[in-house]
Length: 203
Image (cartoon, rainbow, N blue to C red):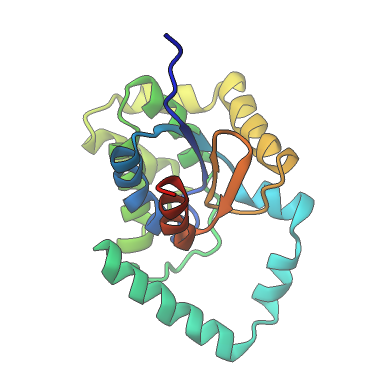
């Protein structure tokens, strides 16, 4: 009998606070709607560089009223999701080591634990996740071998896997993080679209 379970692909980068919010709900959504969750780590900077450079312009010339509201919106959503988000000193951050590490966590079937730790370290504790020392400390607290982790994320095959995920998202019409696809073709962008996904699935 053919498996009729729908799939939800979650393209994400831990350098985005809105992605942290979506991450905190994505597994609950998949559980409620019987969706197979497929983790797709990317580098959102690669997306911005190739197809969405306007993000950099908006950062250098922000609309003050919009920026102020965005921070309020972020804190409102943080309350809803039950997390604390404090804007980190280092922003934007080079998340490449952290995102390569997702593949390591996938092999251990511990993606949720690892990704939560990365998000919490950066967005709540203001730790520099671009630092090899910080990442080694993080995986050590998860009970993983630090040297094994650092060797793994330096492999050419892992660098290529992250690059291919990023390119895949761009080719499929994505322009930021988080981006979700339901059954490959139906794309949704942003934390606030999770409810829309659920509403549509129940129609």
